[in-house]
Amino acid sequence: MIISQSFNQVNRRKMNGPSAAVVKYDEKNGEDPKIVASGKGYIAERIKELAAENNIHMEEDALLLENLIDMDLGENIPPQLYAVIAEILLMIEEIEREI
Image (cartoon, rainbow, N blue to C red):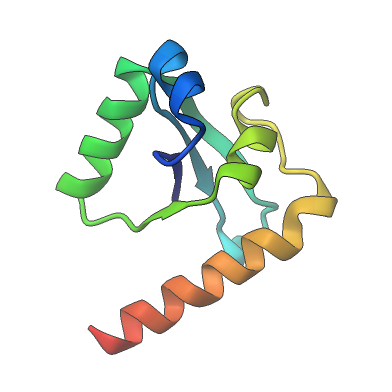
């Protein structure tokens, strides 16, 4: 799942460019969700391009992204963000069922 921020404040985006974070969650192996990639500017654009090329669902959530973008790669997502992640995963499941 890719979390991107393409609708952040206009001035902030002009200065920093877009941002993106990649969350990996393997429910079958009982792993906690973790950050596997993140970046701003060109890196964020490239993450989003690769997601589109590989049919990986992207979700835009500025508040969640603010919390994820500064985390270290491989770091588990804090439990206080699980509810937001769970909502996004449920939306993805619904979208995949409709396809």
